[in-house]
Length: 134
Image 1 (cartoon, rainbow, N blue to C red):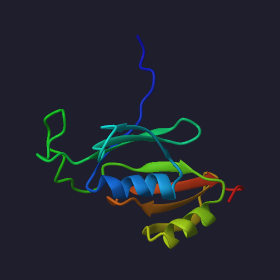
Image 2 (cartoon, one colour):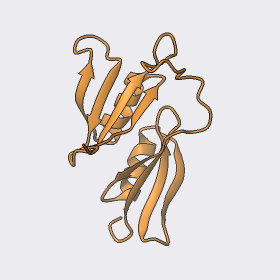
Image 3 (cartoon, rainbow, N blue to C red):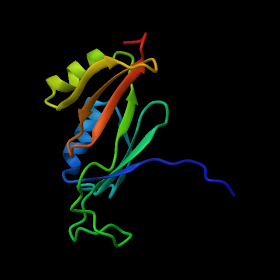
């Protein structure tokens, strides 16, 4: 038996704020939420190509279902790369929405245009496109 797919799961200090960032600012849509009614404690979001990301609220006791502590977290444990047709326009939009820009758009030696913004929990999110695309 082989592994079929994978997607990262983030633990969020403010799940509603993280949902707004990933859905409203980056264009993900909610594919699943638990519980179905009331305030969710977990949502799965996805992009049109099927890329998925799990977002979960820090548990009241500070431990995940695995029993390990979710906080305090130090450093950053996660970076997300999101492809966009126009990196400069995407970063300008995210900055207008109040999201911190960690690195302005620039061309890389490997042929991509990249920039970094921070999600609501401070995780770096790389916005990228092929160098000729934006």
